[in-house]
Image (cartoon, rainbow, N blue to C red):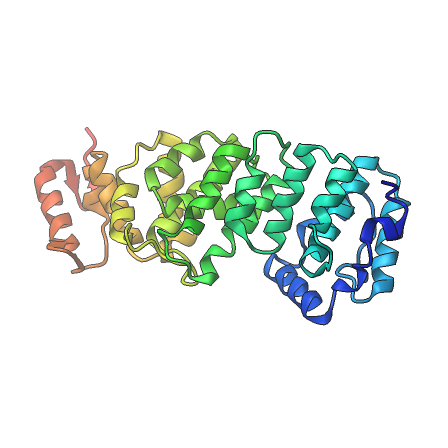
Length: 332
């Protein structure tokens, strides 16, 4: 097939972008943060798309086709872009066969490109389960991996999907198969929040494997998600705040990590979190720093369960005997 022949490619389907179709695409574009993955592909290949995708008129389809075939990119890239457009038009095509499939077969589109295009088309149409099935195929080379991860993470919270639903496992399935680098700050932050809502301990060990310059900030995100997650997020009702906080206190922090965490909870943004001071006290007790417990504690008279931190602190002070005097550790 000659892809430069508009009629051979579109076969009279160019009027398939009616107002409802265009509005639906624009809605999906807004939902995905203002840019579809097809639009990202066009930008990557240095093809201007603003004002012509989605094409609101048949003449806009002609313009889009012209821009694609005249671009300075490989033929297989042009075929991929045209295949995506034909996927858009296939549902309204009046022929006896599938418009996009016929085109892919005619140009001998490689399976790995075909698979990738199916994935991003599904992603752009918010069919996340289908998208992940294609985008984790071992034949494809991950493209836009961080952006795909963010697309899988961000919609989960405002949509209110049940935490045990398939939507909740998709980001981890994609991460395990595609291994996105997570250099995008938003993708990295949302992935830590997502992991922490599944397991504080696993998230902690994942953070330890990140570059040194990232770890302090990622630990702070973990602490926030454990103690006081943003109110607009869907909470895992099977993994309650109390369980996350208890797990946080029991983590095997190294000396540097311990200092980061305590400083964050006593001097940084974390000092405003619910239970921040009590978390510090519990952590000091867990690590045997009883002299520090004797000096500081949670809010006076506050009870958590059957524990009154003021009474506990006073008991620790008395138990320390001469080693704690007037709030200062004994020094020989």
